[in-house]
Image (tube, rainbow, N blue to C red):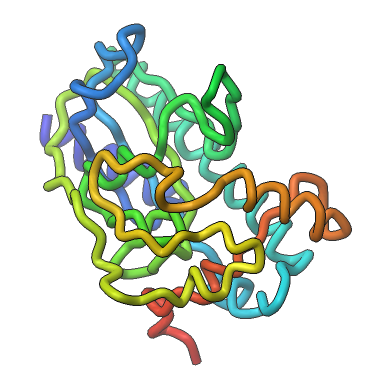
Length: 229
């Protein structure tokens, strides 16, 4: 098993992953996919240069970069899923960026990448509602593979490490960030107003691209910026 785990990590990194983590999700998965209790989190680091160019609004380059990285992540998790199936395991890739509006749940996906990542010990949820990694801050995009393969799970992170910092909240043009410290189990609505964020992007940044993204709070976060020149 260790040989396959090491090979899987090697392959995922060869395909473009910056960081990999494993989590036990058996207690929180929906019934129809609970047999795939293991989560494989794929982290891809964003370009510091592109993020640093964001000022009072996102750039056309960031919009393209965001979409390109999402596509890369989907390719990585697809290849990982196919490899796991070759080995005889059940596996399913969660789309990197997909909104599934069901009932009262808005602006959410099939399964939350951030939940898998925090349970894998890759980072915590920042006051901006994004995963914050110690190495790269929130300058990352995430993907997830669910599988029934037994894996060496990381130590879950259950509390924020943002402390009293409010830089992201103060920089948010839509005032969607409440400035709340995250802890495991806290609903997103107490951290960030997803509707206000989405509405602002739609109203203000449509000239940049369809399905515009912002990135201002990512640019503002002081964690993960030590590599700036």
